[in-house]
Image (cartoon, rainbow, N blue to C red):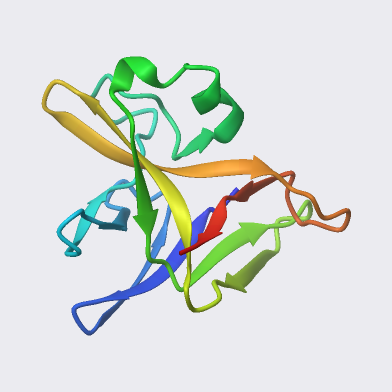
Length: 136
């Protein structure tokens, strides 16, 4: 489900894990600039946006995110981390030229980014939900 990310921004390396309330994700803006945005919302964090750090693609298509004025975005992440069923972390590289799909959700002055997930197509996947990786 993408519990951690590694990326570079402005010649700095960042490694964030979702449980950290300070976790940020890089978002490519229409201008081409990259902005770091808060990654989802944890249970004890204030706000009205959904708890968690992920948005299922099927729930987006079903309209469940519509009330948050969703904006699809590209997340230029180098690696993401998944934990297997035994709790062991595994890091996966994102191929150059590909990116993870994100969703910016908004509610009045609150704005957060969520990782879009799909069901894993691999039988031996370490988790049943997988970040949606796209090219282009």
